[in-house]
Image 1: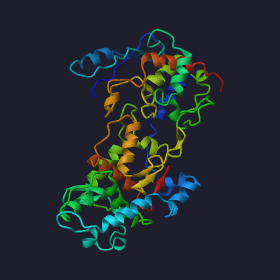
Image 2: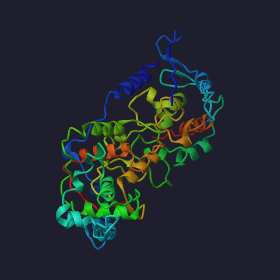
Image 3: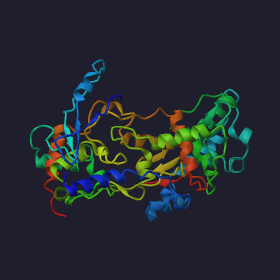
Image 4: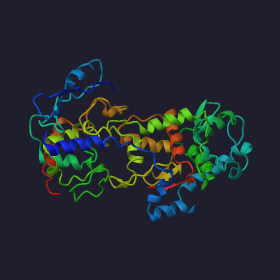
Length: 258
Length: 167
């Protein structure tokens, strides 16, 4: 090996010792901060935010009697503006029924099954997104607060491992982009830190409201990795880790993103 | 997917102790005979130092085809992470070094190894292995048993990148 090549080779090998690190709490940024003025204005103005259409549908669903029990959400929970304040900021949370953390959509479906004696709403259905958006809206501006719960710790750890695991034909991990390279451009788009502060959110690319799991599936597709079925425990573990990673950041639901 | 990485062997012919990796992937692939998928056979190659000096196909690649692969976001994927001297391409990445001057910085053999499997030089690299199928996890069905690029495509890309000599 020529001396010059030897130096390059050694540098490349030493460079490998740089290990991915979590983003310091003070350096965290919502994807909102990378958006243009117009997209921010769309999110900030309820009359311009397309996500508010789902919120309004969700409010109607909240008050509609459902299932064999002919009960509405409001029959148990009353006015969501009071009872649901801060709830979405705490999800995923441990479910004693399931013995593991569930996300907000799964929590809604547990209520439907047990209280309303009704069928679960399909993931990504307009109705489930609407209810999740309506409940999420009641936490807008409140800090994400994932409980320090011994029961959820193994799932949080599993989520962290999924985040740092390389996968797919392109052999990438979530952390390589969202911890190590946020702020850089992937093709033309700025890579955000990946904080799920505004779900379900309205994505201009989708021309629709969508869940965090839908967004995670998009990334797995880009990595050429197998995606999980909607509601899979792996997604919920990842959601739990991402929400913990975004702890203290304010909820933006329904957010708008490019 | 299971499979073994080729084990490195010391080259006695090289006084500086460059590592020579004797790759016998064909043998590994043969062990998947019960696998219903058709697997692309990876051609064997030899790593010398930080390079694969010999063409994967035994032939020189085509410069023009190489450029087309590099700018194609579904095939080469290069511009997702790299920028380069492609004025007609609007959205280029900044995750990785600019491709401008690549041919002046690296030999063809060095370029070849960096495309085939950059993780041999830097295990933490974000650069995907373009010609490796073992050691990958949860590969989507459409891409299982296939490298990102074929040996021919890699030779085309190497030939093109070698022409980028202006910094």
